[in-house]
Each structure stands twice: as structure tokens, then as C-alpha cells.
Image (tube, rainbow over all chains, first blue to last red):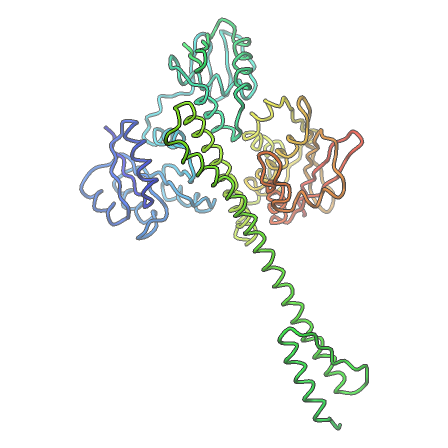
Length: 216
Length: 274
């Protein structure tokens, strides 16, 4: 089990973080300040550190040199969104950087990346369709299917959650996360219909009445 | 030169009054050193008075600004409060509805706070611009990342009629562009086309955004860029366009609006002075 160090002084953010990480199957240790964190790192091994930039007893960066010598990848989680500061952190060897407020899903995917747990993920298959995530292209057999922005995002959500019943609200929220715009419920219905027409028999999207959709 | 003591005393008295903010005009339109001195005193006290007026105005503007912000935050906060209160003993279906409502309000607040922070940074000139040569098509591509779904839903297309390399800060210029495009999208109907163009002249490079709306009235234009002015618009706090303007001004540019009308939409020019 991967062990993640969380150095964060805000109690409610720390609680939410550790809860979500443990739900994902990580072991976590939480510290409020640099002094505690230094004590903890001396005693046990970690696979990754989530560091807040502004801590009660100094800057997260002071922590970084210590962690670097132990080869623990660092992911900064901070309200500081100054571009120069971000560049400096990367120069100092940070693995990644995420600014508050952030989405849990986004953080988890970055953690996976930092831990090199990404299962490639660049090519996804769903039914008879192949999605090249890097290029943003969808093919059925040899034929490339042209999808609009929202159709593509929807298909991607379905592909990442195959054989799971996706509730309408979950889908709407996911799109909202990506686009920053709330999509109306009936818009979703229209787009699923369009997606079905474009994909034909290659992908079957089943409607679960009153709840949502299931694919695969 | 003979100076009357009484005259000097009354001058002193006047200066003190002026320092307290009272009007004082000792000028007498005569010749001689004393009259010149009186003239100078008038200029000096008057300048002080002007400065005080400006400060007073600034203070009022700040207070107004703060009350606008508080008001904008108060609305979502009260609805969140209400919904959390009702959630406890609501049926599950209602609970979900409230939860979604709460999320909606929080996103609004998140957006508002982030825009305000950006504006504060620009206002206090603490932004470091990283100027580079960049194609308008690249800026547009970057801006569209956060707009493609909304454009898709409204079935609006964006056409770039002329590409150009412009020297500007990429991140901030994209920020300004997103806000202009958002506005253009809101002003244009469904199934319409928004046109982006660019060009240069000896004074500045420019990028333009033309919407497919009905154009603007001249008197509407100033209000578009006043913070919180058009906040009754759905989804908007009336700070998208003011932010775009702040970005452009901070990097030695400006935004000019050609109102259009008679079948043509409004055009917003982002100007980058050389």
C-alpha cells in the first residue's frame, strides 16, 4: 500500500484529503506543520508528499529539500497561483503543483501520475470504438467518427466508467468540472441521443429509466 | 514694502481655515510681492483641497466596491445556509437536489473570488507579465479549451479570419480573450458564428471579437466595463469584461468597442500598444 504524507494546516481540507485518499486505497499520515512532518519522515518511509506552500512554521519549500534527499516526489497543494512561484517549484524538483480550490478527481489523477501508476490510459476502447485520448480522436474500425466537444467528453466519461451505472447528476457534474458550465438535464438527453446515432451499433448506451446510463 | 499686520493675521487665519477644508480665496488682483504671495497661497491650499477631494472619492469608491462584493457573496451564502438547514430532514430526492444547488452556489463563489483576486493583483500591479511572440490562433486554441462545450451546446462556431503573431503575455491574454468570447457567445443566438480577426498598424497590434448579436447602443458601452454593473445577467456578476479590460490595460493595451447595430454585432478590439 502506497504511503502518502499530507502536510496541511487547514483541518477541514486535511480531513477531506485523507478521507478521499484512504478511500482510494492509500495509507496516509497527516501533519499540521513542518516540524511534525520532519519528525514523521525521519521515522517512516513515504511514496509521495502533498505539501501546502504556506505552513504555520514556514514555507513548504523548506520541507522540499529534505524530502528530495529521500527521493520522495512532492506535489504542492496551495492557494499560491503566482506563475513565477510555480516555475520555481518545478525548478526545485516538485513533481506537480495544484492550486486551491481544486477538484478531488483532478488531484487523484495527478497523484497517480506522480506515483507512475498511470496505466497508459492514452488509448481507451469502449465497445467497438477506440478513443485516442492524446489526440482526441475516436475511431470505429478504420472509420474516424467526428464528435463535437460535448459528445466527445460524454463518450470519454462513459469509457472511463464502463459497466457502471452512471447517474445523470454524476455525468452532469463531471461535464461541469471539465467545462465550468452547468449543463441542463435535457441537454444531456439530447447529446446521449446524438452520440447513439453517431456510434450506431458499435457502442450500446443503455438508459436506466429515471436514474442514468450504463455502457458496456 | 509696508505690510499691514491685520492683513497678515487674516491671511494666517484663512490658511488655517483652508487646512480644515474651508474655502479660502485671498487673491486680490493687485500687484506687488504680497499679492503674488496671496496668489501662491491660494494655489497651495487649493491643491491640497483637490487632493483631499480625490482621496475622499477613492474612499467612497472603495466602500462601494466592498459593499458590492459583500452583496455578491451574501446571496449565494444565504442560499447555501438555507439549503444546508433544510437538508437535514428532507427526503433523499430533495437532499440531492439541495446538494446540487449548494455545489452550484459554491462554484459561483469560487469563480467570483478567483476573478476578484486576479483583479486585485492587476490593480496593485503585482503581476509579472511574461511577454512572448504568440500566434492569435494559439491564443484562441487555448481560450477555446474552456469554452468548447458551451459553444457546442449553443451550436456556435468561431471563425478566425486573419492570423498574426502578437507579443503579449499568453496566460493573461487568454484570460481576457475567454471573457470576451464568453460575452460574445452570450450575445449571439444559437447556430451563429463569432468572428475573430487580427491586424496591426504603426501604433498597435489588435485582435477583434465580433459577435452575432444585435449590436450595442453607444451609451451601453461604458457600463459593460464597470465592475458589477451588469450583474443581473444570468451566470454573471458583471466582472468578466471589467477583468478583460484590467488585463489589457495592465499590459499596456486597451479594449475598444465598435457598437455595430443594423444587423451587425458588436466588435471588441483588444489593442496591444507597441
